[in-house]
Image (cartoon, rainbow, N blue to C red; front, side, top):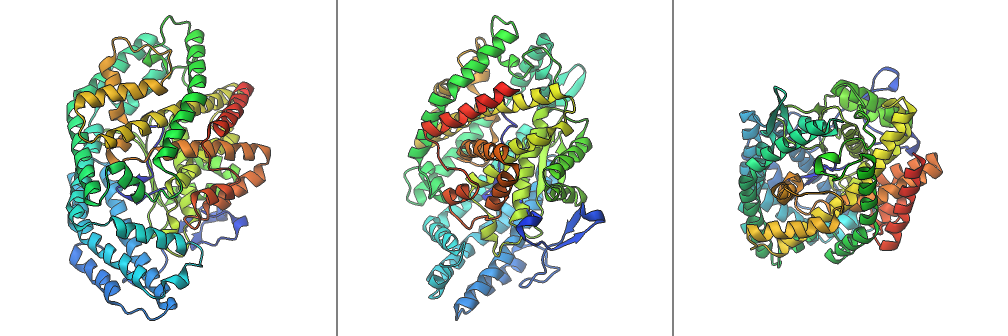
Length: 607
């Protein structure tokens, strides 16, 4: 599961969003290229900062924050203009940080890139934090703010500013800086992990491909190599996680919260659901999805003719066929993905083609590259950057479909009035990506021209959904326990991880002799280190994506249009309203999940 789900929130920045379908009449500032198949998007002209301004140090940037703090606002019109200038400033700052993060994760062994990012988080971000609080208060205290609440999006923005004011504590600034510095260590530790296999040095992502081999001896050997390499750093990763837990707990206590879970729910702006709803989600997954997971595991064991189903038997094809190969290399993956999106709708193809043209794609796995994948929105220019670790697997292809969905969301919200409006709730950001995984199956013949391989790929994708939902529940439940019990011991952590893992895992897989590997499976999940409590969104969005796909299969034009129209709303509506705009429900009751699982099982039967 380590590469299946990738974060769209990085270091406090919401990174899940993308673009415009011509039928939506949503114009873009673009320069079209040949036959309108590609485009170069340029950042809109700056109105507040100089066109050539670059962030070199805090003193130059401070001038513009001071101007906003000191500017007199005498009308609602002037307040809107002030908000526009603030949005421009924040977009420039966000994009600068974005490029520093991107370069650092693309090349974790490049000291200059690491230093540039560290300089930002230690010397610039801490200076911005108190200014942001003053600017938030300036808006809320402005006598004209009520006049804006009737405009779309402003009501939610104002609600969010009040939340930010409530959470801000001066004493937390150095703690956030320390957390930002510490979280970099996870990427550095993980990015340095390699194994030797058949005389070659492989990243763990590259080695993981061998787990699809039809040679069981080879699978077992590489599994043990990967596991041993991870366990080599288990104490270091345990220590890092403990430090992050402690820092996060201190932040929550400083802000008047009992624990970091309650603080983070507030910080994420989770106004539409509570921890109790998450627990209901866990219960629903346990009762409605885990039995299906068990059924699939029993089928796998039977089809592989095994006495014991072991962890290294989970990725190989059940009928002993060679692994599906969706592409040859990163370039081939890129071109086929553009064609896939193009066939769904020409504008969607333009989105990925634009990113290719602007060199906003880094797809292949290599030594010194951080693990995982992400879509990072670049707030000023509007065109995001996709980072991933492709080797040659079908999952790499679906990862690009996933991140491409985020990218489409970024384009769709590009021209919204304020930067705040372009950052939808994470539950909607992930709806964009996970729906694209399923909708894109309509064009997967581009990757799998052979009908049998195509059906096999679709089946793998649907089975992956059934595996994803319990894993999401596992990681989310683990996080609740971790932060409800911040003073737990390492022994407590290990014991409770196993209790939670066993609750949502299939009952067929035999872990005998592998207890230590099982004890530390959670360390693969970068979200726990980098973006705490960002995981339940995947489960909620996965359910929503199934519903979006069901609508698409019933009526392709209407289903795709509703999906895109919901995404173009950005952060102008609440989560339930955005789901409704997509033609689906924001619901994780047992009844609804049972209904959606029934649909997935019916579709599985067809392939």
